[in-house]
Image (cartoon, rainbow, N blue to C red; front, side):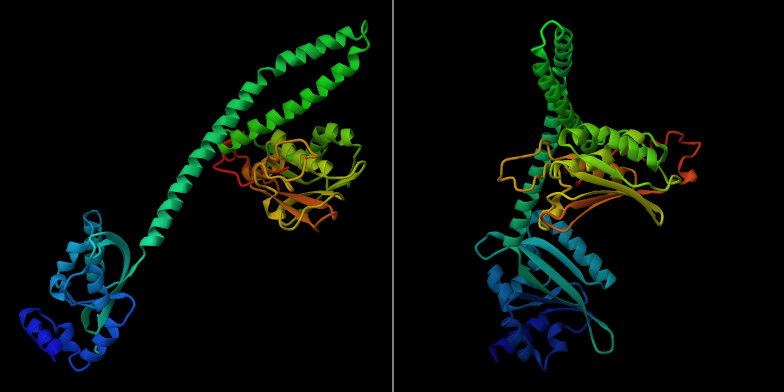
Length: 414
C-alpha cells in the first residue's frame, strides 16, 4: 500500500503529454514490479517524452540512488563524463527513429567506482500500435571490457613486434650479403691455386657449397621482407606453362642432385599458358620441388605434372616421402613453421619456402593447396594459376606490373 501511494504521488508530479508507465499498467503494476525487481539485470522504462520513468531494484542497488534521483534525465549524472555525449546522442537518435539500440558506457556504482555496462533499449508500443516509449536493460560487462582492452593492447604490441621483426630481417639480410662477395672472390683464388696445391680442392668445394647455401638463406630472408613490406615488384607477360615447369626444375636441380633425386615430368598440354612474372613464378614452383626433395628419402623421385581445371592451370608437385601430419597440415604455409621442432633439424632452411611460394601465387591471382595422407604417405602441393587471357595484358599497361606489384601481408613454408 505504501508503494502504491508513493507511485500515485509521483504520478501527480509528472506532467507528460502521454499516459505514464504507471497509468498504462495500473492494474498489473504490482505484479510487474515484483517480477522486474527480481530480475538479475538492471531494467528501466522511459516514456514517449524521452524521460525515464522507472528503474528496478537491481539498478537502484547498483547506483545507490533512489527512483526519484534517477527519474527524467537524472540517471545521466551516473554516466562517465567521457561517455555522456555519445550515450545521449545514441539514445536520442534511436528514440527519434523508433529503432532499438545497444551501447556501452561507464556507469557509476554505489561505491563511486565506474563500471562498464551494456545497455539495450527497444521501443514500447500499445496493442493499438501507439508509441509509449522504451523498455531497456543494462548488464555489467566490466570484466569482459577490461579483457577486450588487454587483448587489444596485446594485439597492438604484437603488431609492433612483428613490424620490428620484419625490419630486423631486412637489415640482417642486407648486412649478410656484404661478406658474400669477398668469400666468393676467395674461393675463385683458391680454385686458381689448385693446380699447384691439389689439397686445396676439397676445402674450396666445401666453402662453395656452404656459400651457395648461405646465398639461398639470405635470398629467402630478402624475399620474405619484400613481400611483407609490399616492396616486391612483378613484371607480367605471357608464359607457357611447359617453359615455367622446365625453368623451375632447372632452378631446383642442385638440391635434387645433392640428394640423389630425379624428377618424373609427365608431358602436359603445350598450349597452356599463364600471365605472370617468369622469374617469380619459377621461383614459387621451384620452392615446391625443393620442399618435396627435402622430405623424400634418398634416393627418391619427385613427380611434376600439369592439367587444366576450368579457368585454372594446375601444376602438381608430388613426392612419396615422410608426409605431413594432419594436425600440422593447416600450418605448413605459416612463416618459419617447422614440424617437430623439439627434434634436431635434419633439413636446412628458414622454413619460409612454402610461405614465399604461396604468397607469390596469390600475387598472381592464384593459390597453392597442400595434401597429405599422413605420416609416410607422401605429400602433394598444387599450384593453381588463372589461364592466360589476352585482355589481361592491355596496351595501357604493357608490363602489367601494376596489377601484381605489392602485397599487404602473407599468411603463408618449406
